[in-house]
Image (cartoon, rainbow, N blue to C red; front, side, top):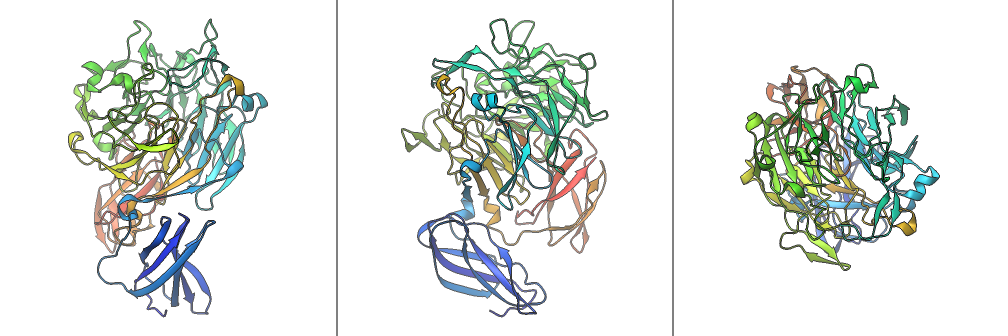
Length: 630
């Protein structure tokens, strides 16, 4: 159809297909008569009967003579289309189908070419670092088979990265220059023996526990390779990793290099600190100790006061004081002195504190509001207990008077039992859940299990954190078709989609030397904002380097009402204490130019690369533009 440059057009057709990878696609004819692919809309669901596919084009570029459109199938399957319509755009853009409110998932199956993604890090080039190490496999560990791959969401392809040691169950964090610091991991694999665990599945491995590695490497995205740094003071298997305001990295917890007298796993008593200035791990004498057994992957969030807030979320047990064996409640750790100040009251008001093992915790948007949410979890010492539905929120702006308040319960989902999906009910909630800050400033939770690694829960929901804890609400959205349980992760991509990887539902047993099934499929979620509210704005001009307290000027393709910086995720075991979104107050300068105000606090926005998102009045977010602060 012939079109007028500068105009937008509404497209519509009917389709039915067996595939979930089908998208409305538009081609345009240039002045020289050549046809080129111009615009592709988000994927739509499979449908046995005819359903509508609609979309409004961007403004037609100058030099365009005509456009064509159709429904394109990007997978094996069948596709039938009918009833094509095109018209000059008028009024508000349409959105039809469940994806308008629920979003839509696609699943990429790589067969034997996938990766056992235990650790997932979004890089500032838009690709995703997937670290398996030995992939929770004793046989692979014995063979020295350690794996890392870089996944490109745009091409759906992997790049293999030589992996120098077993990074399985390491810690990791992006440094201020965008490289990724990896610390600890597996020095010696556990030895398995028979038995029944408190997760209700046959395994124990206390015949010989895990030994944590002292090694540390930096991954360079520009070179796709690891580069060594000096060893840590001690080994750490499941260590924390929090970036400080000066660019240093602080780490505690994880199993020691040396096992106990009965060959059992022992938590390292050492605190570790990586100096950004010297690019080295400091010596034991340079890092004050805390007197706390930090268990594994304790969630320590950098607060505005420069201290680390332990929020009550951890893995494989909970932190306790060495002096008296009492459990550590939520409170502030001073990395400069090692002093820990516990908040008052029982667990500072956190409900079911013993049930926060492998919960998710994050700093709610915006970071300036200093509110931390803890989501779900389970008490693994109680073999009969379900995971919990509870979420709790604490406002750190109240200082030592801060207390948790009850948030909204997680929605019920569909749980896999006996090979069938049945509705959740009663007290059943989720453990191994992933939490992701979205491009529009809302929070998504997805995946998890209700009891053990095998009782997968198909459920996802989105929350608007703008309201007080007691008035927040989770809104159910489309659930990942893949069961995501232990060793699963989810990250926000720069284009506003969400990537979900990993699932390790089978617990290793002695008969297979610790190897276990791992789901290597990658799911991609298209949130509702990709389907609704018209055309997305774009940041067409912005400086790449920003300073604290600065006032950068940006140019956008359309009028906007808000802007924010979202730190790229580096997650494992539901834990990324560095995830945050920073509000950027703005002032309109005219002509879609805006002056932004950058926080002056390094503790609100620790130095590094961030994704800049802007939103229109309707709430539609832009694709990200990468900027570096500090």
